[in-house]
Image (cartoon, rainbow, N blue to C red):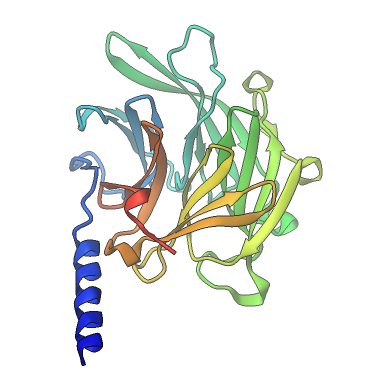
Length: 283
């Protein structure tokens, strides 16, 4: 009986700790659009938050934990903005920011932006479109980018079947590595025959925000609490080295963008809450 009572007490304590996970910060409410949050990218202390259909970009100062500007764009319903990464190279050596890459996901495009700043005001300029091959021809669906700016590489992640929420017909996660196109080339189309490497992993529901950090592919997955997780992949072996349960940490929200701030991995959720990956439940 004592062992049973002790187990119940221990479980209650663990559950209580999980329920006490607090976000690093919470983004502010937006009135300019009703579109939900999607991918995000961080450069130094600034967070660039994108939304579905790309109607605007919110810029947050993470040090001050407040929004400092909103950049309104011409919305495109087909652009999902599922993942966003900064690279390393700049459009011009005098620029303060490196190039910013955005996944459209739904129509096989990657949009490259130049970020500029003048008198404290930020702006973006589309300087390149990277086209991916037709999904049916390449058997590659719901594709998203992961930029390895240090090595000038571009990873494309997606599914081998036309579904992001079902494992039917041998559906798997696929990761393909390319050379990152030079922005000076203008618009380009990638050919999967020219890939550097590739590997597949077992199916997981809903690819979410991802980033290349310390030589690893770091990515969130899932929509509902019982399926949300975060994995760290070694791209050299094509194996998952570490896995966390997001829902298991008591977080009920859908993960969206993955960022690094002050050398720590964080995930932005659809609600605007931002959590440290280290607060997730490690498996």
